[in-house]
Length: 638
Image (cartoon, rainbow, N blue to C red; front, side, top):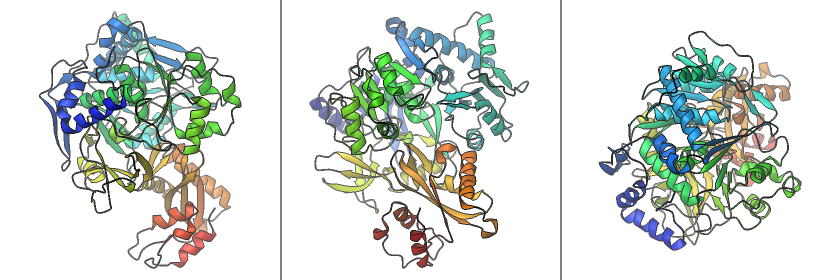
């Protein structure tokens, strides 16, 4: 499969970017022409950032699974589409060709239809990292339903919140999942969530861990039994549902600055075009390459760069069920060696964690197949960049430091591997079609080089979010109202003398923990549900492994005051129960009161400085209701 839009030189990059700005409709029409459409679009782009309202390729008819599967069957049918490496290295891996995957997706699409799923229905998928997760996602898309994948580490309450928001009547899950030396009871967690979600009519359960589970008659069915029903029907075909380019493809929930998660909606056409375009160009994919993205499909990285981008390009995508440090810290390198991986795309958190084990786990593995290394989730610090470069890439593999967000659908700022220059800790340059600007607090554009500001985008790209599910006003206020006429990313950014962009972190109340965004309000709401907690404030602080840790300041009712360490553990467990282990505070400091303005606003800026250890740069505290609180908190810092 050739890619007429693949950029091979820096000169081609400059020409492509300039064309994408001068004639965006012509540029993206040319790219989109390489895909399979049942009907060509009526309009390439209609947009305004005020309402906001963005439409790409509207009137165009397609189904994304025909682009990911059907169109490859003639030339790539016997080629591996997915390689699955299980959690336990002793368990047999699975290799699924494009023909196999097409057959399994068609089969499960018929299972969904048999269980009442129709075009437009929302289907919640809460599974471990098994091939059936990919099959469930693609089968849902094939019949025109909208998938909402929930990461297998979220709590029952978090699942219930998402099910209620999406009004998802259908759930696909596993009896359990393996993650390192842990067994996660997924079906049990779903059962707890469904106590609040009586509207769910069907739960399809895959057998993975053989954990005993409760199966409710009329609601719960086994995946395997449903497949047998389809087989007894002679495995009928399931033609892909015709979708408009602007029909919703999936909802993916991301934390915001308020406690309620927001359902980011991506649509079929523009998302397909942009994820494939960015995959081919950023990683410089060549036919035959083995692509290993270590993310979970429950996050946007897994959607875009395990499934849709690679499969649409006809690539072989490797799915890993386990964790990088189990059964030992050489697991990634075992996988690279075993499958002769060419592209490795992972998170700075994983790299920093593996650095801590030294070079012993690396040295006995053949990593010579690697051609491209990638980083995702947060800016990669220089020390980790150099370790990755020298010890994994052996100084010969370009590192792409990719910046993007759930709302973006695909990579927006990154060097192109071996084509445009890399710079440690910099995302570097925007992809064609992406027009970044830096603005000050008042929204005035900051021009020139060697400047810092808030990062915005001034023109839509094809995979920009279209709305937040069921609440378009929230989409407007979160992303388009802060700086009228611009999409606000929520990140601060520095632009150097060469025009390279370096992301400097969140400027809103959102934490970035191990590359995953968690709203401070969401964590505070969970903490405040614990008996004895009067109020709390949560901020981020530098963490050697996670990039950003969670530091919680808590005012605790003295009448409930027990042994402090036990109380900390109880509060952490409360957060884990309500949100999930990923949101568990790393540090909890009990305080008598929080620094507030006279209007009652908590000054998180001050708390962030204390957590970061920058107590000399706290600034003016005269506007506080009680400035003495700051000294007390400083003296009690953990």
